[in-house]
Image (tube, rainbow, N blue to C red; front, side, top):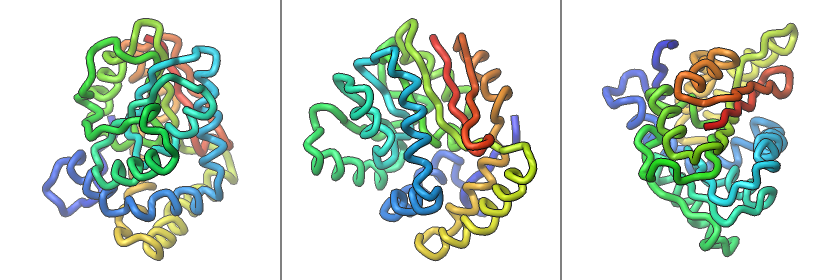
Length: 243
């Protein structure tokens, strides 16, 4: 495994505590910056990831690292499940998700809880599907998190993970590295009160075991039929696995 990258390197807190603090700090500008910095492409990527579950017709879905709920809202629209439960370690992000849920009148369809991705507050075999969008690289212990996602899935249930990856080909690799390492932190500094969050982003992506390395970790956690599907020349990847 790669070295652990934390948001605040001079802080003594665990990665988990630091990630929670970071998202609490950026929660108010998170949605805007997400769409702005990805030029709205993140919405297309989310739809592609959600479509991986279309044939499975899951009725109860767990969205891990749900943040402000954007992925879950899109999943509700496309998959029409009975219910989605979102879990996140940042109270600030969940407060915004709660406001959006109330505003859209979806309290019976989407509920969010404060919780740790490595100790999910659910029974074994509870969910038809588990999704994680841009959250696994923030896990303190990736293997523990994947094992717990596997635990809460029903037999035959599917996990879908959407995460940044590292493009390999010229010139996408060079353009991507320039944008992520220089432009992203600059925009983050301009609009967010926590500029460090946007330098942590490229660092966490660089340290993340993407591609075959990630599907190998999924297999180690007990997943079968694992697949990695690169999007946009490998800027992002969709990973799937079945319990």
